[in-house]
Image (tube, rainbow, N blue to C red; front, side, top):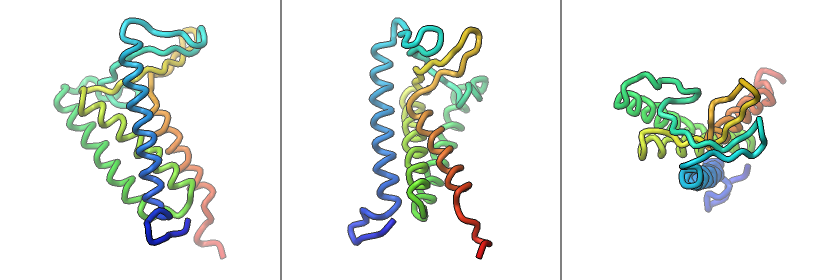
Length: 166
């Protein structure tokens, strides 16, 4: 990535642009889901994929749902805030497009879920994947972005040249 005087070539710029796009799409889809799925779910692929409105008060996979609400919100908002700051710090020195893309996806997804938690005390989830008696926890676009972002960070790390190689 090359830098120019406008800052447009800086990794943090592109990471923030992607984060804003992810954040807007996430909040938009959650608003639609909250309005359209209030009374019923929508089956998209019978026996496999539905749109189902869920208010997730816990973290990923329902973690921390047993904590008292005030502690849970403070803890999860704190963790998400620290994560966002770490991602911003990492974006400042990102050296590859894959890393910038992954960090931007992570940041946008983390901020999307953080805003839900601060506004409502829960995260709006609506993608439901299942098969017979097996089901995956209901998730949202922010969760997808976070998953893709983590995958890209791992892939970037795996493909990065070893600094000890000549």
